[in-house]
Image 1 (cartoon, one colour):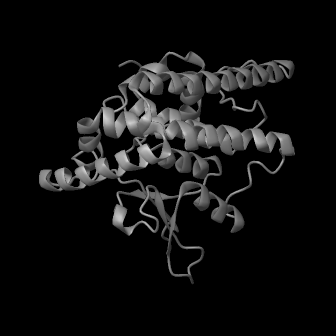
Image 2 (cartoon, one colour; image 1 turned 90 degrees about the vertical axis):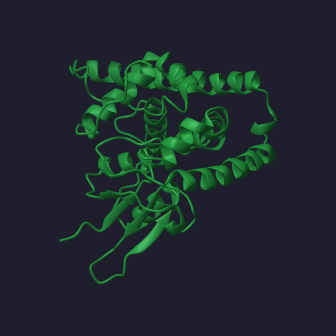
Image 3 (spheres, one colour; image 1 turned 30 degrees about the vertical axis):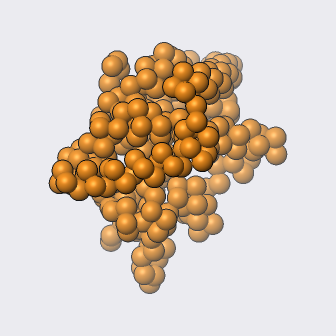
Length: 273
């Protein structure tokens, strides 16, 4: 029986994480529930909202496969179809708000800084990584044409959003502020988890711990892991952030433990750059 889910990642289907934090986020979300899926390169023009990732999803053998876009909306759809559990169902309203705040900090603020670093500050490595042989595998002329359009669109978007109006030093300060805050959440979550486990006589040091410090993951963990893994994999097009993340041992440990538990067959990112 064919797998009803194909995750289109814009990268060749190799046993690796990709540069997109949203792809990594969705892969972890599926693996947390042991949902089988296949990966494919896909094509951005085929995506229902022209974003990566997108998913080909067949709810049942009698249904025609659908194309779903946006990692958050895909997750909500799979929850509504009872294919995925609601990871946040046991949280209090305040905990749900905190979880949402962490996700917003990463996806609605930090991601704009990431986009600037990749597509503006390191345009050529990013173009090669996304459109060249490591990514979509387009001929050079197509890389030049499509990359140029992406660059112009991103410059316009970042200027309208505000990130494009900052100096490089100002972006660096704001980016460091976000990662420092995220690291504080991770350290507190680790300390809560380890204290609880030790109180139960569990002294293992290889199990994942979660950003809110609970017994299991929440939606924020999928977003955070996707972001950390993507930054650690994208050393050529995001060298500054790669060094910044590696400067927080708790963040790297957080991601490594999740990787080792749920992505054992995937290559691990480089420890240093």
